[in-house]
Figure (tube, rainbow, N blue to C red):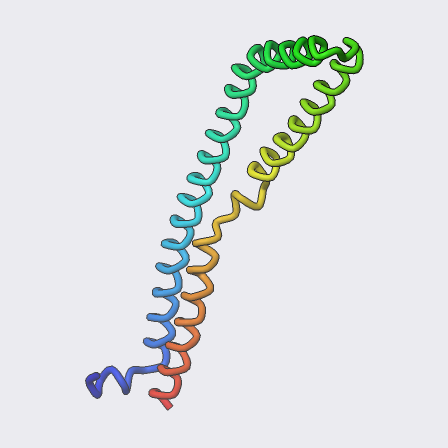
Length: 138
């Protein structure tokens, strides 16, 4: 480094730090907006896929459940018991799938984790730089 850089007035150092901080905040703000938009897009696509998959699966599931009831009845089971068994299994599977889908579409998945991590790193670097500049100026 040059001698003039080490002997800069404190107001210049503070001005540079403020300018750098402003630039950093703007850049991190753009990054956070982009990351949130990306996460919202991903969640929206997931919701759309879940809805479309559910719409397509309903008729097929009804036919398969009716076939399972018919198979149990053919093996000698009463129609009521066959329907309860098939309906109970279908209900359990449906609840599990619903819970998994809901866990994937939660608000925490929209948090800009990468941006938060980057801001923490930037703050640590800025703090370290400020300390070095302060020690050099002293």
